[in-house]
Picture 1: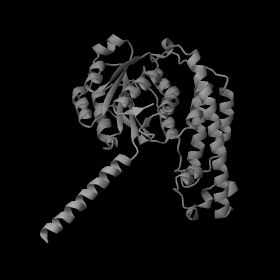
Picture 2 (picture 1 turned 60 degrees about the horizontal axis):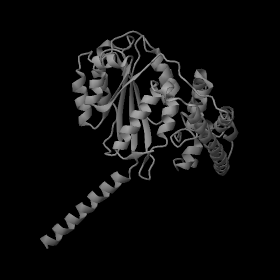
Picture 3 (picture 1 turned 90 degrees about the vertical axis):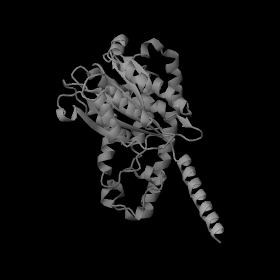
Picture 4 (picture 1 turned 180 degrees about the horizontal axis):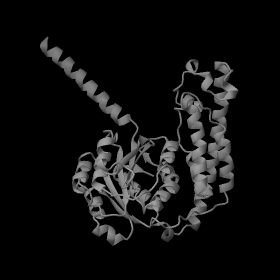
Length: 371
């Protein structure tokens, strides 16, 4: 009898373990990228590149695959080296915890201002390791990109200590020195990347960003305005988020028309998801109970509609959005081919988006991600 009971218990635990392993393997992979940006006085060029090239980086990552699955993307943001930040915290601030909300990421990037200060690379790396929700999914890709232009050795936390902690957590450290390649080596930026299993890169932070204008840009911008008309805000933060979407469109346009185009392309991709405030995305994910919707938080045209009328309206807008997004994707294919024919590698190699995309792709392939 004891033997039989033992066998039953053993089978039970094997079954539970197998289910846990299966659940872990089934869980969607995530590419987690923490950006640690120096916002001291001389770094306006770096921040401007980050603002302008966010969408190019996101668009490239939208094509990533892990087997048959397409991984999620989460981005976190820190600033360091800014004299307006508390000195007792090492002139470091978490601007954004890991987030997949691309409008919020853009908003936070545009909020950054530069000011003189001390740049403590080891401390900001260690802070990001301890504060961010890195998770423990074995197939996630966890990356830190730290950018700056002062010696990597400054501050009370030795960078080697911080990098060692990252190694233990399976997080790769990539360093971006904003200046001469050899100066970055002597400043130990390359050593930080070598020890951290990542890439050492240099950029010209003050270089004028090169955008290639294509014959498809104007049509994509027109489609983007039509795309915005398919969003239906709901809930406590719905109205604010709806207008933040438009604010980030305007932020992109303030940099150039080409940046606005790249953002529009992002908004047609799978990574641009707003189920927390948009009824179309929420309905698609089955994350909404229509009977509990606060009608006072809906757009004016829906406030007096019945539940069935609201559902029907959402379905119409969903169809409209799909058609618009497919048109943008089709135009983007033509646009990418046009750019490939015009692009000269030499003009792109020391820009932030180019070095980051190359590093991410190389490191992702080591973990069986493909493009």
